[in-house]
Image 1 (cartoon, helix red, strand yellow):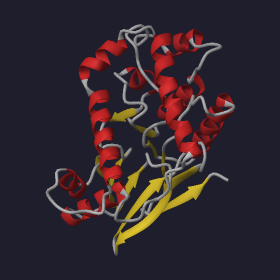
Image 2 (cartoon, rainbow, N blue to C red; image 1 turned 90 degrees about the vertical axis):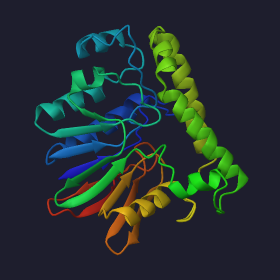
Image 3 (tube, rainbow, N blue to C red; image 1 turned 120 degrees about the vertical axis):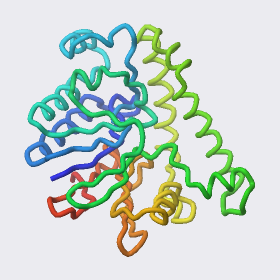
Image 4 (spheres, helix red, strand yellow; image 1 turned 30 degrees about the vertical axis):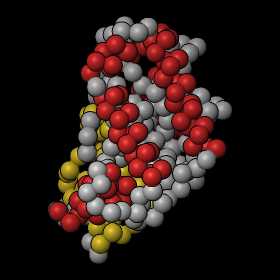
Length: 279
């Protein structure tokens, strides 16, 4: 079996019992590990993640001692290492909350980190997968530039432009380097507070499915399919559960999340893909 999940947002300050939440994710991964050949984690598994200069050379044991009594992801990290030690491929996609891994995560857990979309074939099925942030359809970009009419409202355009700018800033090397020099306590305080505001806003004002014409990831998949056929398009990021046939031979799956919906996808050895709920 091959498994796909995303958006656990471990450590989020809006989760009432973050340790129990982390343990539920770990238990699920251990269960998957009983028959998994590969597990794809499609981003935002952490609500905030940054590998500082001050601890990037430490071992997992050192990390666990340093974070004792604080926000610690040692159970999750040890789970990843156990899975890779069993020979299971674990692929980790950076999201918009856990961009900042500079090699430590791979070194201590053995996961393969992906920083952009992956175009691959699994069990005979061609797949594009990614976290999903930053995948703005070409038609939306042309609309933002005024090159063609669209159904985007002025508010939609402002939101997309703001997100593109913010994503560019977070991926830029200079601010990354300056932030990396901070003591972890300072950086984590900033990161977790920012992430908390994002999670709380989402809980207070859910951002539901917008329909095929306005949903960025659906439009992105449709435009990609017009260029080259893929059987599946698999994304996270949006925190909605979606399984949509976009052509006779192509489907898009948006995985939901691992803190509200508890949904994930599973592919069998014949390439059959289904979206499942942990409950």
